[in-house]
Length: 478
Image 1 (cartoon, one colour):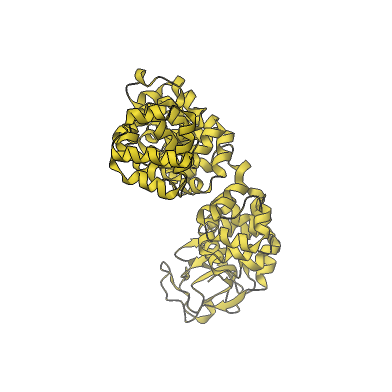
Image 2 (tube, rainbow, N blue to C red):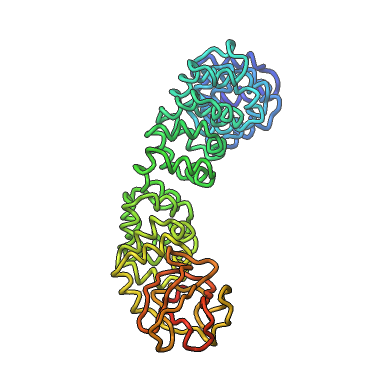
């Protein structure tokens, strides 16, 4: 009987014999409201209602009918709700109705349709004011609502109001430019969760120095952002925001979650950087992400753990990872200080390429006596070919050696006990000893730790015999 009565009511509305005002009066009865709600739970009836322009015209003038439609909306039965939000009259009416907005905010499907309406921005000021519990009349623009600390405090503490903000790119931009407003959002875990959960607008936050400085200054906000993968990725791809985030006071406390979320693994499954480093599958994902490697490299303890890990080769063999670690003297020095890392370092052409071109790293090698002993087991000794060119001021190519090499020592060919001055060069060359004038003799080798690319040499004298050729002991760094 109740279903039949609601069908008759809907038929009368479709026929134009029941107006919006009359429909509102009918729905003042709790039974009739319940009957209409049950009817709208049917996909067919929801579509039937939406398909009738006469029905929708009556409904848009009945706040109760609109509320029932919003309340009943599901993914399967949202046709009527979709029809409501394309009506400028209905949207205006809803934005000015606190009861309607309360119904909307309780139903994600209805709210999504409302916030996606072409008329949402037109009504954002009244929508936001009413959801925040402030009088829309006293605020001439949406900007005045955001910039008023009193109204903004209400917004930051009311999830529905924050949801209204993040649904409007214009409003987000205004908020991102206001330090007081952003400080309130950053101080509220609920507000920050809603903001960071809306990746479609988070670019405006990441590109705002004001917004990011407030987020970075709040421990809770950094934690929320670190665990919001989508928005975290946006920040990591925004250079100024990422640099500031890395330098923030709460960055290190959230590093495991940051690294995990940047590469799409579960922070719960990897609660520490050590657990990520220990898993070759996880570390392979990190090695493929420049931003994740950058984050991991910010931790000295992580670098130490990596230097002693059997998985270090994953990083050393990745051009992406080494583009971050290679130029990082702290990271590479950490690896060089651990004997367990030497085999991996000196079997990786990528790692060797960075070492041979870095004065800091060549100097670190020179200062590490056990490492020099190890490198001597890999070294090759060879002499320059031909004869000196007789030009005491110009360097000539050192033929027959690799393009990149690390010299360990040098001496002169022949049997003379006297010293001759030599220079070695390269482009580039690295290490404090590189390019120095060396007094070489045939009697003994002189320690010379330096990195050379496209190595050259010169005899600062007039000797032009095979006896005045330099001999070097080196490690191939190609």
